Amino acid sequence: MGACREEDDDSTVDDGQDVDAMMGDRKGERLASSLEGYIDLMIDRVRADKKLAELDPSGEATLRMVGTLERARKNGGVSLSDYENAWSDYRQCMLDRGYKEIVLLRQSNGVYTEASHKAGTAAQESSYNQDMLACSVLHVGYIDAVYMVQVSNPDLYANIYEGALDCLRRNGLVPKGYSMEDFRYDLYEAPSREDLKVDIYSYPVASCLVGNNIKVIYDGAPVEDLYG
Image (tube, rainbow, N blue to C red):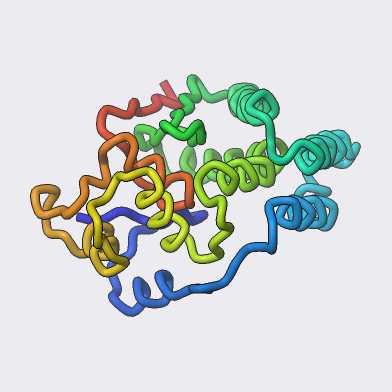
């Protein structure tokens, strides 16, 4: 039993010390002093991103992403249309690379993620991971980061667990007194779903977690068939 933090390798967490380190990472810190400051940080990172420059020799994708973020800074956040366009471009990027289908999951807070998929061969999975990274870097990475913060972590907690717990509390999804220790138990220690203090696999609860980069697949989510 247990959720997993959204990492490049999608690894689950089994070691208690690793959980302690993750849940304590940057605790009490903020990503920036304001959403505008966070957007400025993302713009700087886009311009300094060597992987993006490598994938985008013409500079077209970089200029488009910077333009979207500058518009977000002016308007107080990434617009829904810009966010959905970015994810649509990601989906098309993956389809153009030969995948049979790309299913995007929309959380209750509007955050998108790609559905999990039926496993292929080792070679197929390796290629998929490379393609997913490339399409993410080219189209959604920094835009997604800003949108998730503005809808799921408005107080800009640097620690993803503080951000997620705040989201759960603000939306009335946990009982009064539900603590970080309770949250840890539900994520990493509960022996079965029946033992959960809060059902982290329900749609609205999972949305708060996903919106703070904690990977949880909500009940009934579809599964992609990438390879046919």
